[in-house]
Structure formats: C-alpha cells, structure tokens
Image 1 (cartoon, rainbow, N blue to C red):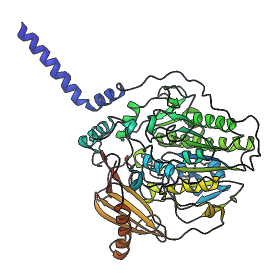
Image 2: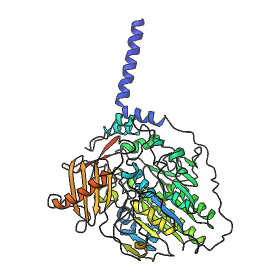
Image 3: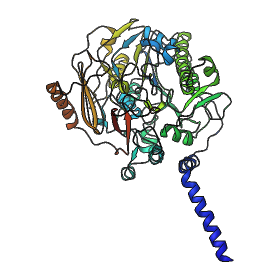
Image 4: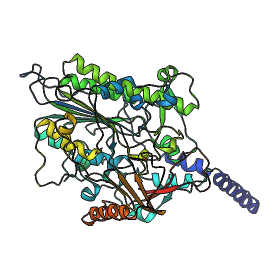
Length: 552
C-alpha cells in the first residue's frame, strides 16, 4: 500500500513540476507579483509648505520662478509642434505647442543619453557620467533576472535580453543605486540662491538619506513611489498590455499605485497620475506665488505601462490598434498638464517672470510597438541614433525671451543647469567642473552660439559624439562604426564611415580624450538588451536588419 501512495505522490509531484514548466513564465511573473510589495495607505492630502501670504516685491522685480516639465519616453513625433502628432497627426498637442510658440525652440536638442536615469542625472548636475560615474539606469531588484527569462519566449527573432548574475551580485540595492550625495544638483544651486525647491513625480536617482530628492536639494518632494497610473481594475482606467514586451510584463506584475511625500510611508495618489501630479503642481504654484520657487515636475507619462483615463480614451476617437489609442489618450493628458500649469501661472499673475521649460528624458521606445513616434528619425530609446536622443526642448520666459524664436545650434540636457543658474543669478558651485554651456544669451538672441562644441553620449561600450554637423557612433556589439553628416542626412540613412576615414579618426579621438579622465561607473551594467534600429518589438525581425546592444 505504501508503495502505491509513494508512487501516486511522485506522479502528482512530477505532474505539478511538468505543469509549472509548461507555464514557467506565468509562474515567474506570479512570484514577482506576490513578493516584495509594500503596504499602501489611503490617499491623504499633501500639506505643502506655504510661502509668504503677501509679497514684499512685485513678481516682475524678483528673481524668476522656474518650472521644468519633463516627460518620460516622449517621442519626437508625439507632439504637433514639429508638424506631427500621434496617429498621423490625428491627436494634436495645442498646449505644448503654445508653450513652444511663446518662447524659444531648440530645434537640435538632445537628451543626456538614450535611457532615463543617466539623462536625469545630467540635467540635474550639468555633468557627464565620465565625471559622476552615474552611467546606467537602476533597475528594481529581481527585474533583470525576470525580464531576461521572459524574453527567451519572444518570437520576433530579436535575441533574448542577457542578464549577468555576477555583475548583479556586486551592485548595491536598487535604492542605493543613486547619484552620489557629493554631486551638486540644480536644486541645491537654486536653493542656495534663496529659492524654495519642489520635486513632483519620477526621480530614479536613488532614495534615502544620500540619494533621495530631499537629500539632493529639494525642500519638498512628492515622489512616484512605484509605477501604475491607476489601479489596474479601476473603473476609470483603460489598460493596454504589451504581450510582446518582457519589460511590460514585469511592470504589470510588480508595479503599485503609490506616492510618497518627503519619502514617508506610501499612500495612494489622488487620481490618474498625470492629472494628480499636475493638480499638486498647481497647488505648489499657488503656495509659493510670493517667493521665488523651482518646481521640477517629472511626469511618468508616457512611459509604460500604458494606462489612460476612460474619458481621454473616448475623447481621442476610434484609433487602431488599441495600444495606440491608449497611448494617444496619455499624450492628451500630458498636453492638458502643460495647459493647466500655464493657466495657473496666468491666474496668479506669475506668467511674465516664470521660466517654463519642457523636454523629455530620451526618445520614444521601440518596445511599445508604435512605429512612427520618433518620425522621421531612425532608432529608439536605448540607441544613439537620433530617434533615441533627439528631444523637444522649449523655454518660455516672456520677461526676457521673445516669442517664436528658434535656435538651430545643438543643445543638450547638460546645458540646463548652467543656463537656469545664469537666468536666476545663482552662482555655479565652486570647485565643480560643469560640462554644460550657459545658453541664456543664445535663448534671448543676445549672442550667437559657440561653434563646434562637441556633445557626448555613452553607455559602456556604445558611445557617440556630435561636433558641428558630424555625428559618430561606435559600438563593440556589434563591432561597428556609423558616421553621418546631419546637414545633408539628418535622419541617418547613409553611413559614410568608410568614405570619410579622416572624420572618423578625428571624432574617435574626441571620444578617446573624453574617456581618458573618466571615473569608473558607480556600479556595473547587468543587462545587455538587443534593439532593432528600424523595427519595433512588435514586428518580426527582418533578415539583415541592424541590431545593436544597449548595456545597462
């Protein structure tokens, strides 16, 4: 009898193991979804610090306020400013267009790099990763292992994502993968000049007493603690899952709907995340109308997971496929945010002497399966082609900058700290090498931009540089060199590296010189993700298609 019992138990165990193996992806994601989540309290009101009830000087005579609105993963063609717009221009962005129209447009603007966190570190410090060591985007604990596993079942022909357990073992925890506290941020520069400094939204530069927003110069911070715009089953939300993207699967399994004020306990936000951040930003403007303030509004939109309000989803109309309609609705919410911020400045009489800057942390990603978001440029987020690093950059300051100005000289996120500091009369930190340039006189039209200053990008063995109209990319995976003359080939269609070896050698020497004095990265890259340069992740990989690897 006992032999039958043992045999039966063995059959059950083996059957269970076999079933688990057949459904291994679901099992892995289930485990991810049910481990390591934090308690989230009910929504509570944020009691923002209140500035003076009465102003001692006119808003026009004191130092300018600064509002920096940063979108996440926004494609160059997602806004209608440049003649585009989502779904072939069906969805326009009138409020973002207004901001651009009423100030200066940098028509050749670049992010710090092609992924979010290092780009944010560069705009906060004005310094390259060669100085800060902050070179790779921190990923939540366990994320690399899960997405690498899940990517192996992808059928597009794209190779799986590679994850290094050895490198991960030498990395600090996610919360400690941050911008070092020794770095001087824009918030600290303006805080020392008498500004009240507020952060709202995404941070992604570490957390806690050394790395969090409060530690890095912000008097107040309303932090995006996790990554859902609304609870997945909320009656007012419309979701779009991307079953072809392993990162999206991880996000749906792991992310929560949560905020945190000054890094206190987590609580539920008060509505759809883009609208909630905007409403709180409006409260901050009103609370500080009688003193100079710096507001860093770092939206999560339009990063995955794709979630829109049902109202926005209905408003954009019958757009196909479903994920494009949800994405269009998210763009509509982002544009509404900009409009509400501008409206509040008008209401409070602050518009004339408030600098409003709008940009994105990098280009749009190919992994959402929408082919036109960076049109007409090649490449995506996680590539150094123009589609991955070319971003909108608008600056409105009616008191100093004439409307409808355009600057065609290249500009970059590292230029923002010195430019904003100059506008606010704030001295740059002593003893700190700033890589960015002060573009204020260029923005106002008082001076012409300096010619020939190079702009650098890097992620480990994949690097790039632009000087003048020449742009070089070099990679070890694949071993390849790309050279483009952006004056005649702005969309990087014709690689002329073999035809102009002298230009390649000149720019390669710049890259080498840039690396000579570089500090080591703060932690190693743990992931190597393949990216098809000209196809989305939703498409079958074409034979001979260009695939690069992005180390992170």
